[in-house]
Image (cartoon, rainbow, N blue to C red; front, side, top):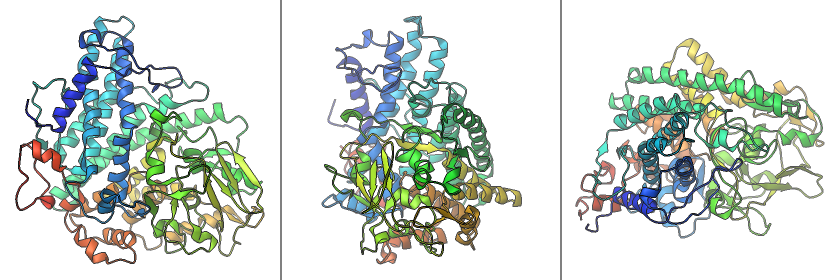
Length: 634
């Protein structure tokens, strides 16, 4: 074979090497289904003989998604071009610098989609070979095969979905590539075709995978219910895909709102399925797991939690132990991984092979217990500094759980540390420390009721170079806000009211009462959350939803995708929402210069990697990145 090495060729060769050469098998212990256990060399005819062979390949699909090549692109593709982040300490990394400055080049290494197609092909191998194991191993049952098939269909759909949102026109890979004799040069398909394929996979998977809660919880480890695809995860992805299919349909219809109506209805239907099922799950989980944590309650009849006593004035340490974002990202009740609000997480452990390198690299890191440092990215000023004209109100827990701003202490700084995923200490001179598992907070000074909010805190990181915090792909508040977005876009009076109620529930559970210097809440909690009306005054319904998505899901790889979806629906990049994004992202710079780099819909998608274009004559570059002289094909 010649030197043509497209992604499909590389996949086929790696697949062949996997099955014919050294195989890294994965055992499924009761507590950690991603435990890696090397095995001897295995040839194809000796593999796919047992239930364990199937389980090892299923686990491999999940493991591949948690590794650097995959997860770093989840961060880069979904966050870098959005207005949550600005330049941090990326030094000579020209690839990151170019993306941040809206200079999208086909030669950029982050345009590589290899990691995603590798996961897709691993799923396809399981789908191809697992049925044959029924005849080889009596312990592998039809029920086992059904669950495996459902998981692999859903993971394949999720990977294709990431690629559509990033590149728009992509090859659709639904056949296992195992040798070079196959048709290795796959053509791109229309995004609607790709999304319909995703929906077909997901709707079959919905009837096959297990319900959240059906996996056993061992030693308080809940990694399978949140770390494997369940019905809640499948239904959440279906809802998300429908939002995007509607956006693409409206774009193709020249901005016609009617084109996406049926998709919005299906999005709402599937969000309701998730919320109703998760309400039952959360109620049962809290009954069985409170163990003295009676202050944890569900908020406003939704399956999201809040600490009731944290809004009712009692000892200041417990105010912060059970803040929802402390529980999900930085410690608190049951640690930070796989909380009850999670729908699907990419699992990480403290072992070096399975560590979360993306968080310290992009967001924040610390060496040898020294002060936490800005990573490749800094939080944008609009996110880092609270106030009436900024993203977060002064009483919003999320700002102090997501970002450390030295400006809180009156320091003049231009970079802000993203601490959302870190395990850190908050230390203040003369303060009494309060420890909650992996997280330690100390508080010495709060503003009075006239100003509100936390004034001063400083952080040290225990995260180091390897993090064991999971990457949350979907959680319940995301589902609530998807539903709110779909309701808003349907536009009826009842729909708009329900959308506002959903946004308000997510917003209000994140607010704290005004505190005096001892940490005691002053006044009624409701007075502090009434600022919802102030924060949302004069906001258009869709802007209200998108602002709350930005507040709630900051740094989770969502923001840029939200903005692209808006532009597709509007069939323009000059809407008020998009203009506000440019102003926030490039505050203090020549915003017209950056707007020009995003003047068309084509420019919102990443270019196809130059390497792929050189070797696959079937690929067509995005119009925004075509050169006068087409790249020579090998």
